[in-house]
Length: 264
Ligand SMILES: [Zn+2]
Image 1 (tube, rainbow, N blue to C red):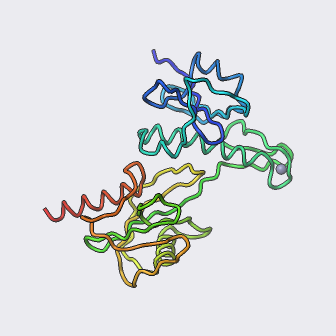
Image 2 (image 1 turned 30 degrees about the vertical axis):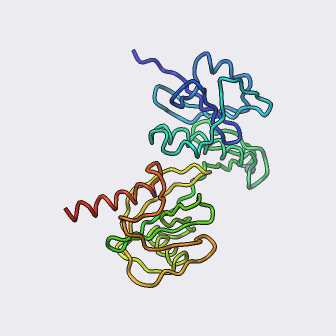
Image 3 (image 1 turned 180 degrees about the vertical axis):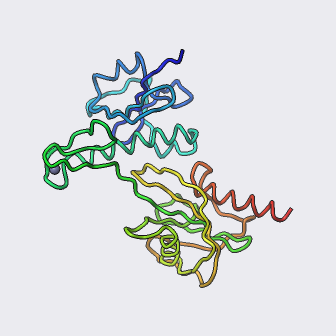
């Protein structure tokens, strides 16, 4: 017989509640959840999770944690959890963020309510429905043979270089976004754009869509705002790159593996 358990993913101000003694980050259930429940400000169903139903929980402001708990930043968990678990924590965080920001109807100003059947909020006065927002972003690794185009944003940690990225604009096909972002950020043209994979990125609601592109023409000229430095790096002398927990880190490693396969 399968035991079905409700799992509670507990947050406050976008930080995750964890038990100090557990090596792995787990949602709350059973007796530990009954202890937390009276102090929850809101409980939002997030659908099926391994073992049963999942709920995202925002704790009330005055909630004091005991010595056995700690608050962790979700961003710090990138690469620390397996993809499936990270995406569930991310889904919980993203849905809480969306709920906080869609409490009122944008059309008539009435307070919205949870939809009975769908993952949505609806307005009881004018029946408008509001679905969770997902913001698509492209992330692109531009290559020129054995060289990779890597760039720095002023927001990156010291010494870190990564792929280019940008938000998809309204009415824009993804291939066009790839070309436009590259042209805006480093002024070059690319060809042979190929899709790689995607990664939900709940900070707060992006969906990263990864592409490879080959250099075609132009000289690197950085925009100086979104990008503070960019250059071609040989795959054997790379700067600090993002971890494998990120799609950018995976694309860089995948490209280098393919180069090695082709040469051997
Ligand atoms: Zn309304």
